[in-house]
Image (cartoon, rainbow, N blue to C red; front, side):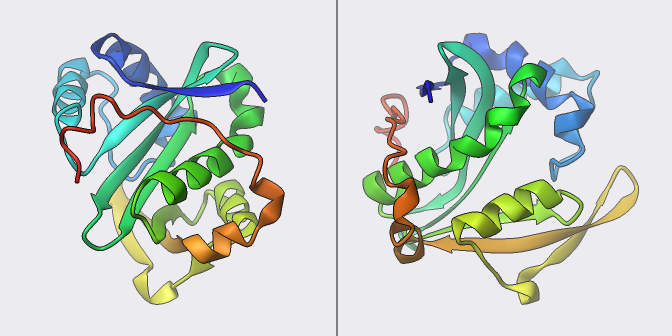
Length: 188
């Protein structure tokens, strides 16, 4: 696969907004997003470029930007992080399932992370199945409900342990760099 990952830059802001406001993407996001409010999105984007516990990359396929991947709630003191990703380009949705192994191999090798956690909307069965395939465990006691667009949605809590991931040898060749030049000065 010809995936690469590059740091986001200010010029990516509008593209990310267009991706995030697609119904196919936004319906599975935990946060509500007003698709008409680019100014709020830009504020979020500008703040995100300064955070220590959050970082994002553009996913590229053959040098074409196709999506976004991020670390959130990064806590090197507790060896844990959350993450998420989406494919923004409709024509590349089918290859999205190949992306997580690259991320897991990089995170568990280059950061002091022992556990990756996620919350996935219960209705997002494809992503839940993908996480199951990658070795995620579930902790139903941490499942929770949110109100999104006025509707109650269940979030399924799942986590992936470093040891479990590295025992899955079929993904060991999924290696790519996730550059952190703009983040390095802010993280531990």
